[in-house]
Amino acid sequence: MVAITDDTATPRTEAPAATRWATAIRRNPTIAAGAVLLAILVSLAILAPWLTADPLKQATINRLRPPSERFWFGTDQFGRDIFARTLHGARVSLIVGLTVAAISSVIGLALGIVCGYFRRIDGIVMRVMDGIMAIPSILLAIALITLTRPGLAVVIIAIVIPEVPRVVRVVRSVVLSIRAQPYIDSAIAGGTRGFKLLARHVLPNTLAPLIVQATYICAAGMLIEAALSFLGAGVPPEIPSWGNIIAQGRSFFQIAPWTILIPGAFLALTVLAVNLMGDGLRDRLDPRLARRM
Amino acid sequence: MALRAMGPSLSRLREREIMTAYILRRLLATVPVMAVVAVFVFFLLRIAPGDPAAIIAGEDATAEAINAVRAKLGLDRPVLEQFALWLWRLAQGDLGDSIFSNLPVTRLIAQRLEPTVALTLSTLFVAVALAIPVGVIAAWQVRKLADRLVMIFAVLGFAVPGFLAAYVLIYIFAVQLQWLPVQGYRPIAEGLWPFIEGLILPSIALGVTYMALIARITRASMLEVLSQDYIRTANSKGLATRRVLLLHALKNAAVPIVTVIGIGIALLISGVVITETVFNIPGLGRLTVDAVLKRDYPIVQGLILVFAAAKVLVNLVIDISYAFLDPRIRY
Image: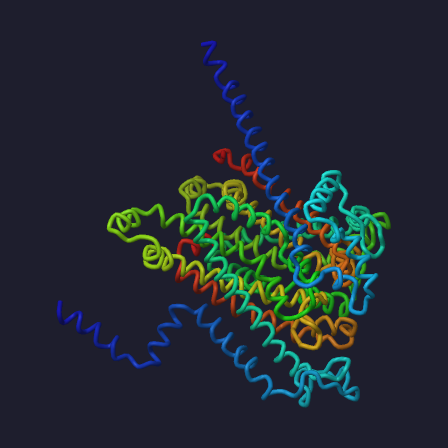
């Protein structure tokens, strides 16, 4: 017995880093693929000012050039470099996706816990959530934007509001199912109350579904931002974002399809990377959900 | 004997009563949801930061112009009075007037209804007709090539935004191959083929994510049913594969599929705004975008109510259809 455990324990503890990585990738190929893709896109976004020319610099002499050695992704009708604009657009998309996911998770977590704990507030809050969920998210965002001055912060808030109910629902259902567990009764009988009960037993259980939900919200947030900017109701045109680059390429699409297809492909790749991570995390963290899809 | 003969008809009568009560209850449950939507769009204008009247009037509007907008929106009167008036009008089906054209919002919506309904229904039709067979094939060929291809399509379908799909389709089928028009909409009154021709690309573009969703749930639901004992029985007594798949398996896998078809209609409703812009279709989506760009809030407000009502109505139909699809479901 001792010999057997030694045999298995020794190689595992002394395995070189490379082997351990290989095992991790083999176990979670989707998370790994998503993470690598996302890491590349994030580095391109961060390094954009050093990798590219000025995304706003106009040069009419270079207008509507197809992709070439000088302009990797071609130029638009003002002679602006699409490569520079696409990489700078990545910054907007990623910032919006991450902040939307973070803010909706925090608000949704707080509301979800309150709803799961206090039954009287629950009824009211959930009816409001049902109402917000009945409004298509792009329309709700559009309505908010109609009433304010354009800007990145407004876009983020406008996307957060329709996403919050999704988090509240997930967190609330977890809290309700935890509360019904016998070990909660024994914890209460043992003297664990209030905040301690919340921090020790409830919060840790909400974490896995919350992370999975947050990745999907991040992806949805990026898609909604692109849609809003495409419609002219999102990020103002002086900040290049994938949505408004595509919107500005519309009138020249038939002669210069690269102005739309390249930023569009980047958007799809980024959303794909985040979704792959979400699917992988869901399969790992929340097997109950994984079986359903 | 007489009692036993009456048994089945009595229980059937009782069942119908339960069903009617269920439908009524579901119908009543939509009232608070719509009330929240109505209250929400009303107060959105009142709690918006800054001065919405000034923003709607535009950058260089005079004080009189701003005051005129404020009066038109009723922002110069007490909130409760405005709210009561608004609810009273809403109850009579009056959604207010456009700020710029002064036309009633209901009339503007009615004028633009046909293209949007046509686009939504054709997308629904195309998506269901393509995605369910694809999902069934994937489940039947599980872990083989066909299944892998379907799953790759499903994963990509969630990542590709509607307008990118639209431009790729336009580039291939309208610009390069020139099989279909680049954009535009022809009403059904101008002939069936021009009408259908104009809807093919928009329907596929709008339906990409929706198809991915339906194909994925069909596959998952079918896989679950195919592992059941009665499927093995059906197979072993020599029934044809097609018969087992369609008659035995698909019928029992229907409830989750119908649920997802219903949930997905929300995707279509959000998507029409984008798709109609790309393809230049003069429907409710275009009306929304035009209203947003002109900051014509009464129109935006009316459209939100209409779209939300459509969504709530679809959910209601789905909930009621459960009771028919699966007689075990009773709430």
